[in-house]
Length: 129
Ligand code: HEC
Image: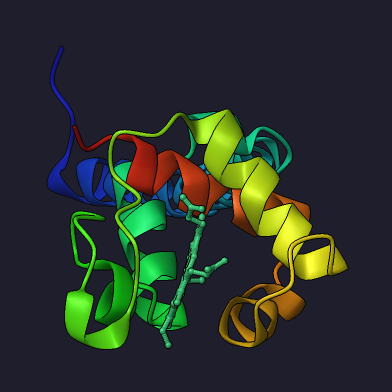
């Protein structure tokens, strides 16, 4: 098959246009998929990622009293959290939040944690021996 240079050129331009709209479609699809992934992560926080956990621990400042690995911090009177199960830690955090366990420091720390955040934080500190 032989084509004149002009025909070739036209065909090329057409391809670029189609490719352009395809790219947009893929971007849109990508964004939709990302949105889906995010919402499942939020609803199933027992499988929160290490990154999510570290971010939240950092944001909430738990490590200043409990240690980066939950080893505890005597000078801040923060007890060791490592070695406890995710369930136990989550239960305690909820108990501080509701006032069932009375402690002014932890009441403030747990006060505005959502159930999801409690699970993420508990998952983080339960990973250490
Ligand atoms: C200012 C210091 C401080 C900060 C910050 C802090 N805690 Fe505490 N935490 C304590 C103290 C003190 C206790 C012991 C309270 C008591 O005697 O009931 C405690 C107890 C706990 C317990 C119960 C431990 C056990 O075995 O009974 C958990 C769980 C806990 N903290 C989680 C957290 C998390 C998660 C964060 C971050 C959101 C956090 N703490 C931030 C000081 C702190």
